[in-house]
Length: 215
Image (tube, rainbow, N blue to C red):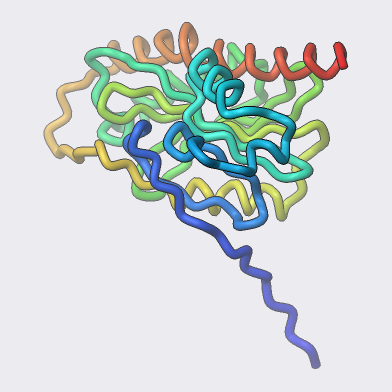
């Protein structure tokens, strides 16, 4: 009898000082960060230049852009104020943020994804893309980890995305057992993300579609 074992995808760790974080991306993917563009010859493989990639990242608040033939994984960051870190909030407070994200994205539901940190995860479709987003806030920086593709995610792809998320380490996270945040502030988190991070993600996807249509 032959035992079928899961195939572990070899990954490379990327330190992203500009994002105060690190994460692991499969070796076979193209991975660009704001910190690894200089001298990166893989940019030319995609028909781009360092200047163009820098411009894309700066204009869209992108700090990581990793992709293979099927999907793209992006990390967006916008600054917030007086929020702290989402992981230090109670789950019932984070639910307010989840509801805001569901309403804005037209998703069916959300869940709170937990490892060493807390994220709000939503799945939805927009402009012909299937999208899985993980949202969190760390030290007043709002992070969106967004996996995007033009067809439905397979179970294996969802597992790969989850493995990437489990590898994320935030340099700027400080845990606290004395939460000063309140439910009212948690509603404010939702509004901040709605006006900032989510708008950026949706604009990024729509820009992709428009670019493809014009080719």
